[in-house]
Length: 225
Image (cartoon, rainbow, N blue to C red):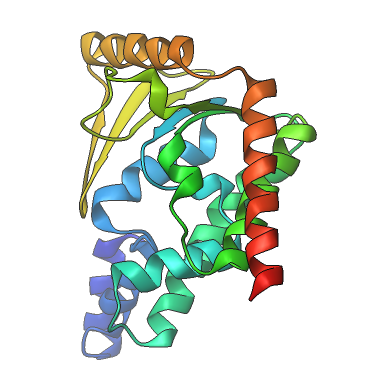
């Protein structure tokens, strides 16, 4: 319902702003304000390329991993709030349920694999989920190893999105903030940075072997507990 009509209905029916309030609620994104536009763009992208320095990217996360992340972000939040955040994250994950679209290519800093989020069981499941998506050829994943040294994206994460009928976008994510860019020169610069990262990263085959080995290490830790 258009806002102007909602206001008119309230006036005619004497509903004290009921339609206006619910019109606003219906259009409010379930994502944080700084990410809402990027989430909408992500949902229609034909290709998504993402560099993550610290976390497994949202589209590759399991429910348990996402829950652990949100508990860390908001340690005093009620469980209902965490449930809503996890549900929104899992809605995004459904993007990869299509067997072909979008193309998803992630470059993960080695720190994303070694930083234990949740307990060892949660981490083992998360790593194995990434490995399974790679084996199913649903995601291209490369690991940027510690010994790659300094690189062009040390200041933060990066997401690039391409579309069938629109110019590409870049999204820069920060602590409780984000910036969606459509300036062609800026997007081209971040595209170059992404390809430089890919050149320094392990091949997908070697990345898969490392991810599965670290998943096994987590399994052994669980067995020893």
